[in-house]
Each structure stands twice: as structure tokens, then as C-alpha cells.
Length: 92
Image (cartoon, rainbow, N blue to C red):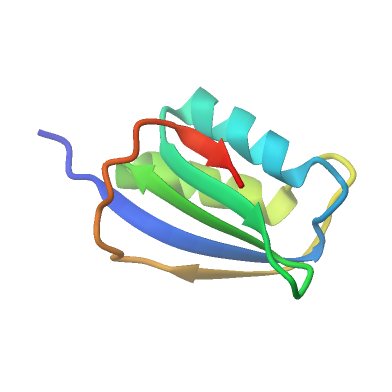
């Protein structure tokens, strides 16, 4: 059985109003991972993503680039969160 993990990724920069969350959802679907993405009051985007660690690494690589119009300045990652067994990737 493939071990699953859940990571919290916080992305800073020009990441709101540039379809960042929609591209995060598309990327999550393509990689077969679940979780959510939501805008935060400080202008960042908070993402929690769950799935096989190799897929989470690919998602994290995407998060450093973001959507075509985004300008990612900083990415913080917190690993080893409790699994939530989400069914899909939602935009909040």
C-alpha cells in the first residue's frame, strides 16, 4: 500500500486574483491528490494537499511557479499533518 501524507503549503507573492487556486485545483486533479486552496487575508494562498508523497512533491514544485499570471515570492511547507481523507480538491 502506498503511504499517504498531508502537507500545508502557504504561497506568498502575487497569488490572489491570478487564478492561482483554479490552477492549483487543475494541478491537484492531474496529480490525483485531494485537499483545498483558499485565499488568506494577508494576500497569501493556503493549500492543504493529501496523497502519495511523490505526488505532493510534484504539487509543491508547481506551487513555486503557480498560475501563468502569478508571481510567487515565497513558499512555506508544513509536512506530517494528520490525514483528513478528503474526497476531492476544493477551492475555498
